[in-house]
Length: 144
Ligand code: DQA
Image (cartoon, rainbow, N blue to C red; front, side, top):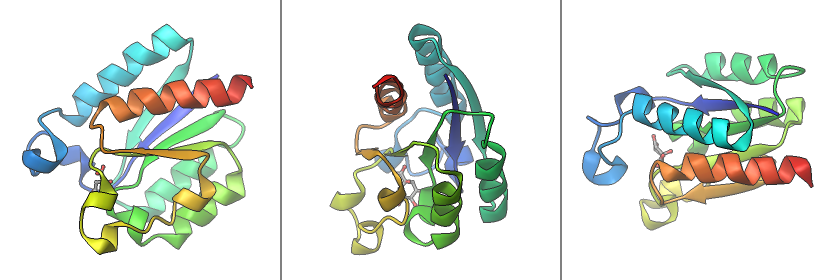
């Protein structure tokens, strides 16, 4: 199986960005962890980060016929983008939603996710390992 790993706005700054919330790992570190997990799980992964809502939507569309599932941390678009949720819904691939921080422990505005209703499930609060857990969960989901 092939999985698209999508990261949204400001996640390119991981490592430097509010490390007390998001930790010390960079996005490159996380993508390396994902590549290692993919090799172990027999997955092909493609990693993509964008700060632009439309670029994320284009990437979701391009996953049609190319990938078997999507791992997405949409960053703040999680809480605002009906358009990204619609794209995920339109494409219909199984989605695993990931957040480094526990969004439910934070400000109320972060408690609602537009992505959650179009996802198989969500992993939040466990930091970078959440991406690995999401890959494992999607693998399991795809082979059921
Ligand atoms: C985040 C949580 C969001 O609320 C925030 O806007 C982010 C990162 C996380 O991974 O914890 O950019 O998605």
